[in-house]
Image (cartoon, rainbow, N blue to C red; front, side):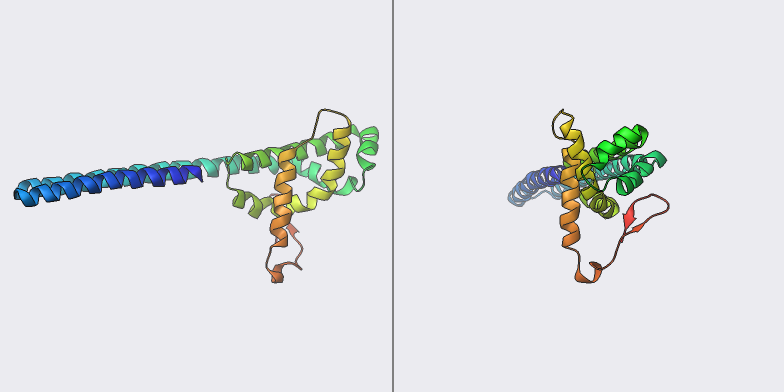
Length: 206
């Protein structure tokens, strides 16, 4: 969003300078009539404005394309088969605060898959916090899945934190909370609907 405002301000400044130049040229031409100079000044100003607008448009579309590529890249990683399995294990195996320790003892491979899935969710949250992707895109596509994962993930994260090393995955915590808040603000006619799991991408959609 800051880039958009920067482009807007720079464009406004450039157009302002060009308008001042144009007014000055017009006043000068009125004082000293010369039709050839007036046409040349108008042409110069018009071409300059067009160049500024074209450059600003190109910069904007490159910026938007970068956002799209970042979103598709992280989306592709999230729908990896093993990451999907990690999310299913999170929902099926982690129901209370004792389950993570039990799972680590009984099947460390399953524990690691859940760990990977949540770590990637945290990367998704990092992308949002750094504005590498649009937050609305992420919440539209992954918001329901984040809401479903949050209560299970809290038990898993609490177990990890007890192992030491500081708070685990703060970006996931912030993003999943934003998803919960957004879900609570949904229109009344949608609140009774449960998300469905997409067979293609593994994400949840309403």
